Length: 63
Image (tube, rainbow, N blue to C red; front, top):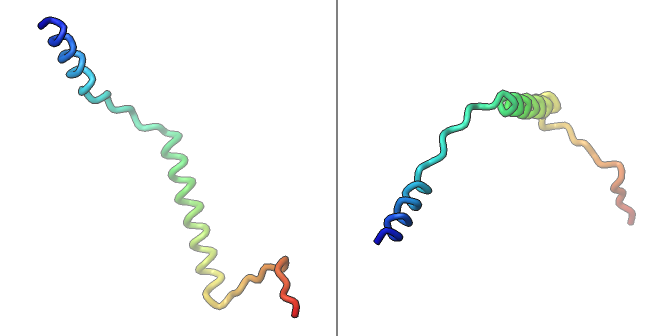
C-alpha cells in the first residue's frame, strides 16, 4: 500500500507544470529583425511592381 501511495505522489508531482520563463530580450530582437526583413522584402515587391520581370541569365534556351 505504501508503494502505491509513493507512486501516486510521484505521478502527481510530474503533473505540475513548470514555472513560466521570463521573456528574453534576444527573442524580441530576433522577432523585430524578422519583421524588418519581411517589411523590406514586401517593400521591394511593391517598388518593382507587377510589370517587372527578372530573367535568370544562367538559363538559356537553344533550338
